[in-house]
Length: 365
Image (cartoon, rainbow, N blue to C red; front, side, top):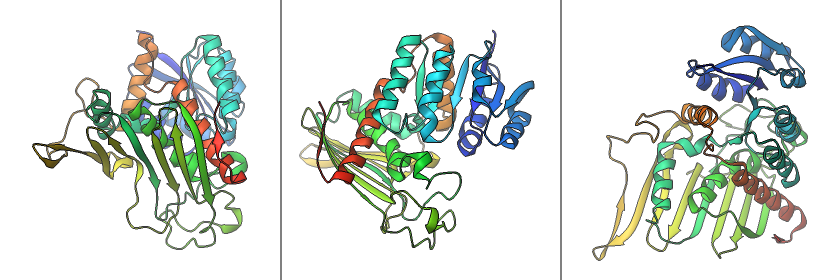
């Protein structure tokens, strides 16, 4: 079997923490033949660690797109460049995985979706939290109707003091926002996926920048208040066309003692589900609740654990995401995260920011 040839655009933290280690475990199917970064030393280092002997190293992403032998591009750059790089990559005949969020606004996300449809190439977005064991268990229960009609949900993305102090995270001009677009996007993606509901009707949002001058005790070390340009917390109330309500909470810094990140609470007519544990490091679990036998009951995983949904193997979320993406390309099947789903996440996040800015409810056509 000929290996898929990958090109990586952006060799920073998310590339080294997620994509490179996961793709390295698929060396029987994948080889990385090109690396691009605006800081050439990062691309050179990545090529030595993960690339083929003759891997291309460049600062110009279009040099990767000009190579006809490259099958797949991963776009791992700051949020503001997701759209145009992805569109260019699709137009050059490559399949694309773009890191979350899909784009900084709906219009740019729509350009990506349109390009994927026009070129017939596969496009997926890096929502790796779908591949956790607890996420798959929750989705399985929802898709089988075990919770009934899910009419209320909370999307949790809250840190007590976890402002990222590396890269460009607090730089609004490069990221398009703060915790809402950074980690709130994961929680919202999970919520819409569980509910299988992608039709928002109205959004009311609030954003705050209340703790930027208080960097004390941040888990990633103190940040510089002078360069902290984004919100530190954001909240959205989303009403769906079918009447369901979603409350989204996202914060890098919020004075509360029980943070939850990339987790969801679901309330349905037949039962509920709530996610607990350290989900971001694959130590999360879900507790289901219902009324049965004239009493209230709840169930949660035993200490023996479970198995992952792909070939019965337990995999970290990053590895499972990479495996299914590669398999989708090789087998010409749909990836788990479809761009038609991810664009709705971007649409809602943009509406929360707009509502917070204007003080008005945002209504969708």
